[in-house]
Image (cartoon, rainbow, N blue to C red):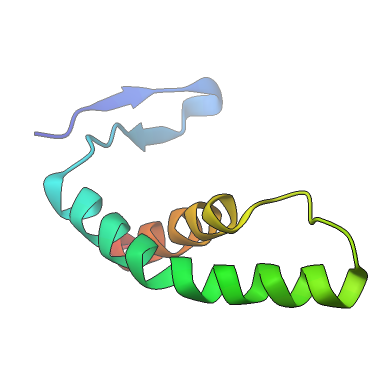
Length: 74
């Protein structure tokens, strides 16, 4: 059940509880994103001739973290 609470300036925000569906979608998107992130990381490595700041798994994690909430947005 979602509860509402009052925040600054009278704006209501809904507390969201992580649901199993979110974890499932996040995991599936992460699994699909890892190979693409790995290819992108290798291409960046070859093109710039230095190791990128963000590794392939971190890149895939970030992409999954950006895409998954969009699925559940009202």
